[in-house]
Image (cartoon, rainbow, N blue to C red; front, side, top):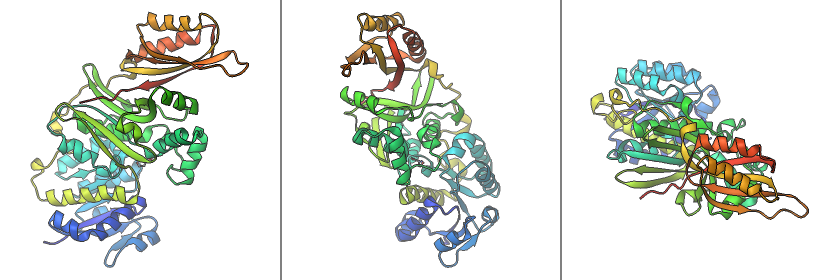
Length: 438
Ligand code: HSE
């Protein structure tokens, strides 16, 4: 059978990785797909770079519009990232009846609803395995492997850069700033690392996972997002002493009141497998009602790991290319006319447990005052440690772990605790999850 023609837009890290994997494993990929998959056109503003990558007979252009308008191209692979140009190109490709593969999590999380609706109308596929957790086939697992289940929750380490920073802080006792510089030196963090360290990149990926896990529209704007920039070595060490590790988690959970959608630093028991995911690696735990908790682990970024995900999509699209659109797996795993309007739970209403660190004067009654505030709000203490004051100091750190409480009650408690006369510093609050599940 005649090979399927692919147009590649963007030859950065992922583009290069995709090309390399496709070339190296061509024979096996053809045996799997049932026909050859050939990159016949490459677009990049850096023409020289595109030329270096392109093999014989591959058309190279600086104008990506030529790819999405070329009638010979069957599948467009968008790997330029960003919102404006990428969106225009994808919509144009769809309009021209082409299937699209993208790694663009930011675009899908913000404009996925519009893009999938356009693809649905045209009867083309938009595949996005590479958009979440790089090489880990988490989209495939959620959309197909776990399709029998009512998904209960997902918890993921889905930003390698922030996980690397937290690992370095814990392992080597580094400050956040030093660990970030280290990540930048090794080329993990972007030049502007805001998306990584402020949890925005993780929120994009969480939005996509929640959408296909629960059959809800993409709602990036409703994700509660808190990054890792304010974490200290002390909190990481205290958490360890209590048997917990701090990770930046993306969490989504179905509750009777709505769906939780949140990214924040989280204490998780050190004995959990996911707590031991270190460095730039990613991992996602999915809890289904039938299967229980399942764990997916692997490289969340990098040329060939992400290329592996793009090529998997290429094979899928090639196989389903001629199928009746009704017989394909729906974009968001659920039939588009059966998406649910379950509300997203505001953060104030979320119930979880908490780590609190309070700096107080080491005086009689200091602890009793704090305990009273918590008791008045129905917040129960699970564990408590008071640190020895340093030589000549009158202030001590008190660390408390609470039982489950509603976020708005904790907020009120913190506001009241801050006003106590024995309080000398700020109150540090980090959320805590057990992530148990049989
Ligand atoms: N910046 C991302 C990370 C890379 O650090 O995980 C891929 O999304």
